[in-house]
Length: 471
Image (cartoon, rainbow, N blue to C red; front, side):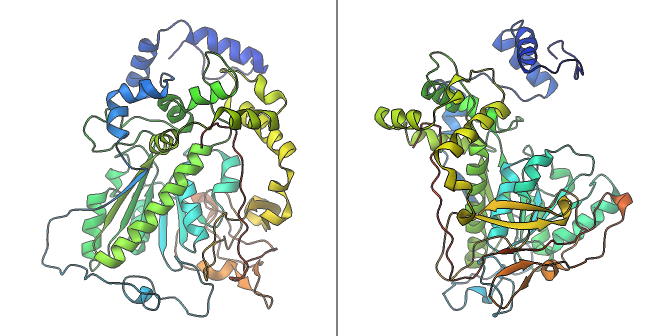
């Protein structure tokens, strides 16, 4: 699109990569790049300041939205009776649409809830990861030929089962439909409308809910720009990811100013908007389940990277004195970064600075660990959940695994977890029938390792000081 080959094996020097791309981009104006992005369906935006974003049609429309929305899905009435409303109490909450689960098992808020996750990379999968920490059975479905970032899978696939299905294949689509018929929640992390042709849109799900006895669905959509169905939200259907949202809303400019760059935006370190949006999506999904339980019907939940960034920026910047204190803590090469540095470079330097300033954040007191057969039996460490609810367990029951690791099914969910005499969760060596290799599924087997999971042992809350100078 900008006159460069898709891959140049001779171009391995970091600085030369930057110079090559920068020289090619400088040949075009911002308007020309915007036109080419739209023509070729590519993700890219002008880096706007917060005030400028609010003056755009999309910024004006989406700035009025809350961080997430939960709305009833309207469908034509049928002769089937509506799902009757239900008023939950502490003793009867699981007496209606909520799945019946054994009373003597681990006390998770979402135990028995079945979730299909149709997402990639970080934000959408974080919704599923978070729901899994609350006890939901989360099955991540990805296409066998769809590109993803394996490094991210080590984190965002924690607590899930994962499977490959090509929905363009009639046999795989039939398998998917069977899975969907039993699900309570569908997470859609693709561009708005991209999955509609497979029946993964709010209207189709609501109709399916009627066909299965009015047991409603909770549809959770996560995308980059937000504003689907909102008048004036002209960018609602555009492609994008965290850095796109950070640049268009003004977060990147705030980051650049914090770093002392006079007239340069800088992508924030770490996928903070991704994980923040994932947290919003989890809360939205749980709110949707509550609405389904108390009011019946199917519910549509929406959030986006831009909505999270808007929420963040509306909180305002930290006072200058606090910003200076943070700059004094996070010393080193981080503040020598420039606008052209890659997100990997920025995040790497930020992580080093965090480790120097707060080494305890990655210490054993705040981490869980287990071996994952999906990652060749290697030990994986991941942070404990940073929230607690009296009387409920909030943590993952199984270690991460790569995409496509499990067979496509709901059966055998509890077979890779046992509880030992000390009331600690232990990932044990339990074999499940492997999926055929030709289907690009993988053998499921859990590794060994211990995780502190007793309900009375509360998760410690880890407060991480971020480098982004917003409250």
